[in-house]
Image (cartoon, rainbow, N blue to C red; front, side):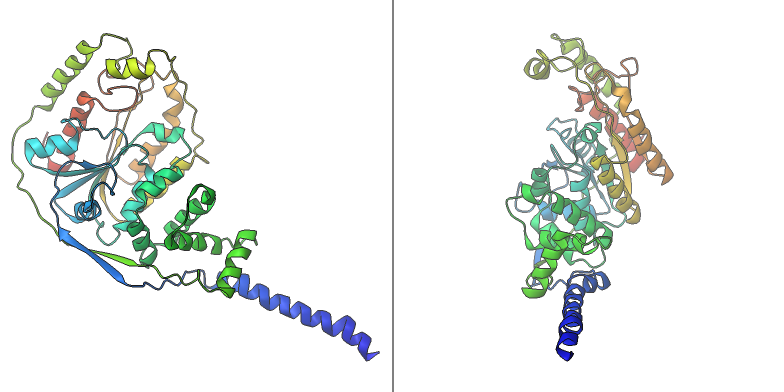
Length: 402
């Protein structure tokens, strides 16, 4: 009789107890303490003197000191940082060339193709100790929202290892941003050749905060944590930038922006020989001569990944009280035949900016009658005329010159 009681009652009870303890350590303990315990191996100091006050970096791996120059630009109260994408060309009329050359302003551009909202957010998070009240201009291309957001190749290019290390080690950065990065990495894990310790830690933060369900990924993650102890307490090198900020002396040269811009517009139009859609001849002959007009897909603002990235970037900009402004680029309506489908997106961006009193320069139009020929060099990138209009806006907004 006692044997039967032991067999049918005590053994199941003990087994259930063991299962409970096991699951507690795997899941409940993580829910109670969902922060990753980071143990920096050491702090690496990157020091130097700020030397770059003009021009651009396509990315921050172009030269050895690019990271330091970016951090210095963000920290400097006298330097303006521009963040953009493929519209950042080598034209002498780009803001980061023209205003330093003509007025000795300090302006640094960051970005080239695929440098979008998420990459910008990561770079600014990495400059968290330096970015309070920074002066910054964001160039927003509607074409970003016609994609699936930042692709994994672009993430690897712009999310510098030093930056990810600095973000994961900074306890003053809200867990919301770290979890968001972890979700991104986790959702594209198969697209990366490998993951760093900091990337693994971001994923762990995301997985640990999924408290509404028990996932296989969470199970595997916690088994590794509890039995190997190699991921829950990663050893990640901390990065510190020690900067010697330098300044140039602005001059008071008067520029008649309207006159210069008009001359550039007329020159652009008069040089077009091959098409009637106001596109540079070389671009048209290379990419468009045998191509019909393009049709845009209307972004779903509830699910569009780029739009969600942009809203989180905007949230961070507001939290850090940045002196930010936004340039909203147009698309060429002579080529894109349904540019009106982007109006809800543009209106939503404008509404979010207006809600927080953030200045913006909206150049987007939805029809050919409203389009200003020459503002774009092709179908989505600024021409010299477009850059001159932007130069006037920035000079007026940040330097008080009209």
